[in-house]
Image (cartoon, rainbow, N blue to C red; front, side):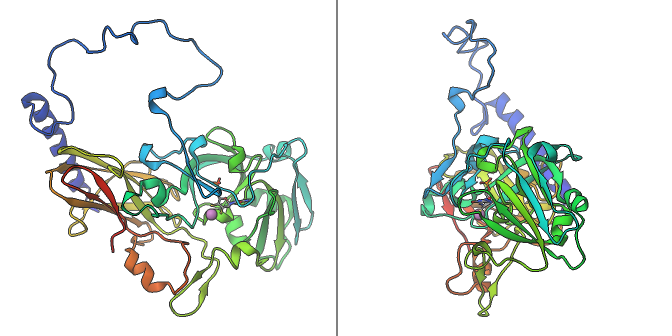
Length: 408
Ligand SMILES: Nc1nc2c(c(=O)[nH]1)N[C@H]1C(S)=C(S)[C@@H](COP(=O)(O)O)O[C@H]1N2
Ligand SMILES: [Mo]
């Protein structure tokens, strides 16, 4: 990926901005300076004693944020309003199959049993005594594509079911060592303490690789919606395997074939087979700004978005500002972390003509984000909405309004 290209673009961007400020050129990113005083200098809001410190911080009333609940079963992260890579905990998307249980850590226990030398029970306090591990990681529901508002779909409908936190917990391998896994074991069945006792089977190899049992999210106890007091974090794997409100881990030599891995979360393929245990999240990206329902003005814009892959690091993101005819490398905002949202940016001068913006992610395995047409070529009739990661775009209209474009 040519880095010099995007650097040149950045330099050009700065020069243009400078020129705009001096010459008040059309399309400047900042307002021309009329005088030397600030308009708000003497308004009622400045230079007045305000409220003092308080136990809990709040958002500015001018910058309120909210998740977008839908269908009674999910709430979307509003990516169109976010910057950087961490999702504020109270904006982490939600997907509950039976609501949020009210679990008291005083009585909550985790049972680790099955093909182990020593079955063990842990309280939250017990779990916290083990060596801790902290990492940033996204969780994405594999059914993360709901453009049901057509052209008027904002980013949260396109991929609002992915969010990223910095998680803290204990490596599952540490607990498994404590219990002693018996020879012949190959799967681990994780069960939640919610109404449906949601359960999923995870290959033991993955459990020993990088799965964590987490109790903290962005520096504090994980939120009830995210699985308080503890959940499984299965980096890069479909959200459903990240069992919340974790209460039981059973070591076995076969998957349990639960509802969540048979009738749900499987994909009919074109060759008549059903794809099962499609764990990994495929690389994906979305331009979050500009996006519907924003409006843009002629001149310089910074195109911004996020990209992620369940297979490792994002190697690069290419952006097209001409509807997919040509592509340029975006600047990657470091540090680029494995199985994590990665921010990309690209300066772009909008000349006022109708066009379309698109982005496509490439991960470190060389996997390139496909078009919708490519995905549909593989999928059979009746294929559900799982593992949809198509290149998507934003149509830019001459009036500066943006519209969702599924492309391909
Ligand atoms: N016990 C339990 N675990 C669960 C779920 C659930 O309903 N119950 N939902 C799963 C699904 S489908 C997803 S996508 C993620 C959502 O995690 P979040 O709500 O913290 O974003 O949790 C998974 N773990
Ligand atoms: Mo999900």
